[in-house]
Image (cartoon, rainbow, N blue to C red; front, side, top):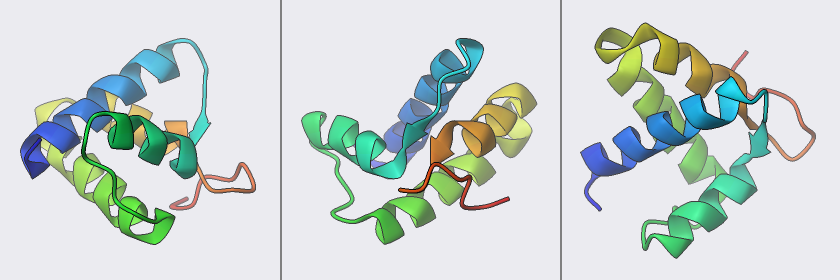
Amino acid sequence: MNKTEVYDFIGELAIALYSKKIQISLSSLNEILKDKGSDYGNNRGLGAGVSAAWRHWKEKDPVIYHAIAHTFTDKHGELPWL
């Protein structure tokens, strides 16, 4: 997957999870991406990737943009960017 495909996937996953009021950790997201052949190796890199996906969706779809910000958590269950 190229970066745009990863950003699209992160957004689509975020809205699916958000619609069911589910949050997952960055580590869990990284495992899902790893299964798709696109892992980031560590949560710091993935945090930057999720932030890039968030910016990618900002104009494209504000609902998904919002879902990304409220779906993925750090290892303590906190939203790392709020």
